Image (cartoon, rainbow, N blue to C red; front, side, top):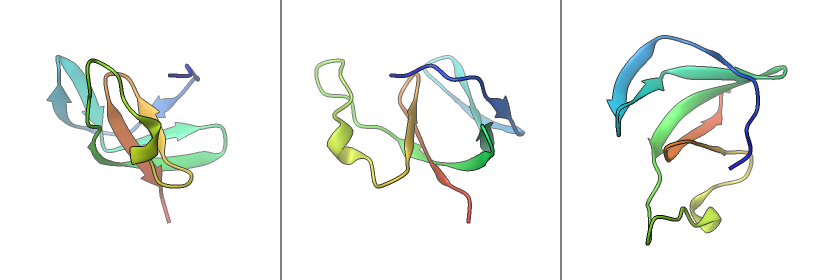
Amino acid sequence: MAQTETDQGPQVGNYLGQPIYQTIESGNDTYVFDRIAESIDGEFPLDQLNKNELLIKPGLIYRPKV
């Protein structure tokens, strides 16, 4: 997974000991937490992502805010 600098909105939960933020900002874009990624043998297949979604450690999928 690529590492980028982000700003976070309010925390809405935890997953695998890591915070889930309602929104994250990367560059000029805002993304909204959508779902937990499916892990297969410790890997996260990228075919579960829709266009323009982000996969963030430890397996959180964010979609663009509209």
